[in-house]
Length: 147
Image (cartoon, rainbow, N blue to C red):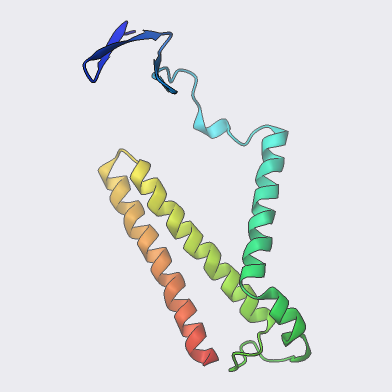
């Protein structure tokens, strides 16, 4: 372990692998850090399920579920209606899935910035922009049918 680290011309003491500088504490001790055991406890699994359920409800509401319940429930047999005033349940499901694809692309872009491997960065950047592009393309195709 290092006893002192120069930070902007000053010497900051380090105790037990943690660097304290002002309000921030930086830790260099990564022993025992295991990223695979994050969702193994029952409470963290419950939190994960609640988070996913929250995202599903939020994306469904954002994609027009209320409009589909009010206006599109009486129109049976059509998957997409070429009208901006009416939305079916099928359209709501498609738009919700598009929002999840876009979120996955955004998450891949975020993870590409955190990756240390250049090949993994490149793969995640391409995959992230590809997923976001596919979501936008299908969304614009749906809008062009609706107009």
